[in-house]
Image (cartoon, rainbow, N blue to C red; front, side):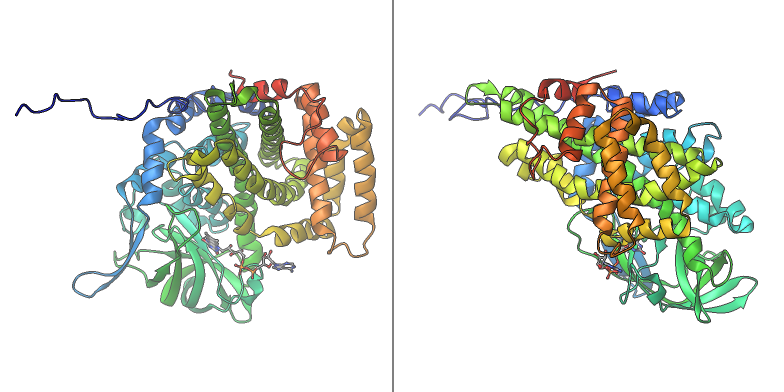
Length: 551
Ligand SMILES: Cc1cc2nc3c(=O)[nH]c(=O)nc-3n(C[C@H](O)[C@H](O)[C@H](O)COP(=O)(O)OP(=O)(O)OC[C@H]3O[C@@H](n4cnc5c(N)ncnc54)[C@H](O)[C@@H]3O)c2cc1C
């Protein structure tokens, strides 16, 4: 009997139609006119070549495949070697190492410190925004290494040894003493079982061992990127807390006593390991003044909080781009989704939220650049927690809505939206959870009342020409002046501060129609409880086109 004629492999039962083509990987820098204008306005147009290269990388298929692999094949803890020796190693999929090489090789962690020119923080923020469209787990060691530089400068001898390795634009995962490394990463370990937000509860003890060295005993309940080369940590010297650097390797080449007990099984952020660790006779060097551990390490969290604001704006962009791509190519009920009036309302509303978050992030970055100017320093002090609180709240609803734009295809692991959705809540928890951040705003105001003046001065010009914003400013001033139950009202006040500043930035820099839609909805309340509830008079097409505008 003759064999049946060979038929091509594939679907014999149906044709595949009405599916969007694979996302084309448009350069995330050149494809984002709003980003480019914000970066140029805030003083870092010179980052063009780096941003162009990174924009191509993060949107490319290769990096997206690495991101998918590194999050599917999660890190594993190996406590002992085959002979029973303790090794405390975390083993990562090769994709993770390649991602680390890409991020650190691009200077995403270091450009703010190495560029030595006007706009360095804005330039680095552009890289961070772009990187967070590629992969978010690696963003954790990137951010911690960036922020650690500032704290280590408290100890010039340590900074001399560590800083050139941290700032190197390369990645060296070898477990070696710092002097033998080509590059180093630094993490931080503060949170203990009995308290994370309230660091005063830290119980780890530090005994002096001579020459600024100490020996630590205790534990940390969360310690991310545990294969970093060093960790900034808190421990008690006497009754007060001091800040320490714990190196993973000792100068003689042996490993420090840094015992990894387990890895957390996390909701998202899965490519990045987060460990529970114990210090048991662990060698450490003090950083900063004895007994001033919290003020010393809090400088690091000020920078990581800033980074989170920028990261969330980047994540909003990533989610929006996927939603737009799908809706441009998918049809239902005889029309492309992007042409359906109700879907246009959803996409336009998301675009407004992303634009306001991006303007806020890059204005904040400029405040870090101009730290020497006291008004900018005060502005950075107060806007960092205000913006951290707000964009971390908005990203969750944003990610869900963007996912829904893809229908069922958004809810499967092959879609980048699944990863973004699971990643979204973590930025609102670490580096200070919502309530703690809202209370930090009140604390900043109490400590440096001039912060409030700097804040209102930033909004004044826009408010002078926009009565609806002026009305909110008056209400906010009254709210802040009323000390009664201010703590209970903290979230509400911080939310209003964030929206007022976003409205001022939209008034100054966005198209008039976009600023008007933002103010009508977010300030005046002509809006529903979900995205996609812009009033019918809003020109959604114009807002969507702004999000699609290329340079
Ligand atoms: C994935 C991941 C990785 C992490 N990596 C690290 C790391 O590398 N290093 C590190 O040190 N930590 C790390 N953390 C820990 C993180 O910083 C803490 O979980 C966070 O600061 C909250 O502390 P907590 O878990 O002890 O919660 P708690 O402090 O118990 O807070 C619980 C809730 O109570 C609220 N709350 C606290 N105080 C008040 C108050 N006065 N009024 C009202 N509400 C309040 C908080 O906002 C929060 O919602 C990580 C966490 C996660 C999820």
